Length: 270
Image (cartoon, rainbow, N blue to C red; front, side, top):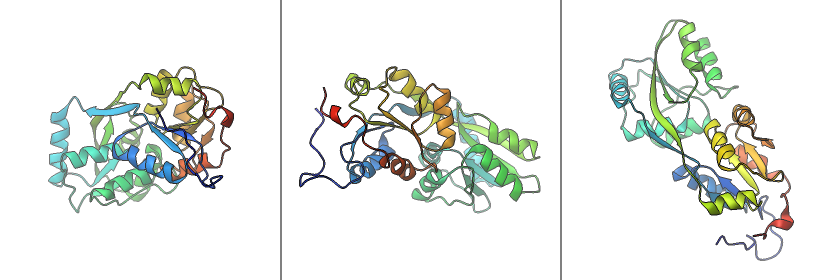
């Protein structure tokens, strides 16, 4: 049973998320890091992986692309998720000094740097595939050879825009996203309001939230990590309550911390 003691025993806690139970939708090192940040703010994190990542069904194509990357065949490598960084690291992929690396946002850039890869471009204004395409096109007036690594379900926005601008693009699936069923206890806690907030960190997570939690109380905060994810979440049928201005976990948690704790009187309801 989850510990229902308040996080501060010496009186009323001044931590911004004291008393909150927050669902963290991914596990692994990412989930552990988010959980630690939430605890530092006084919240009780509930790590419930809703998605996981499986190998691409075309490993031969991926391995050939990574071999060509190491051989210097590309001027640019683009990454639109931190999960793609995990794939690079798993393969011990070599990125030559002659190949520039573009990351879609701060989270992906941090993942690259954490495992020893450099980052040459992060979109300044729009942390999306379209924003990345716009900045790369503005930087490169001459045709370049570009490798785009993506998930199986990613829309080919980046690839299409770069090709339309005259670049030679090889688009390769690096991984697949699969749903992970939550435990009955967590499903029940969401349904009865014991979870105060659900972090929605991608369109794939939004789909799983909608499918696995068909009855989410109105008081439960649905928090989206950036405008693009908020749009995907609404398209999936979720009522988004708060949107982080930047696509980072810190911005997402900060956005939630500014809200009053919903249905506090139900905190110990079973």
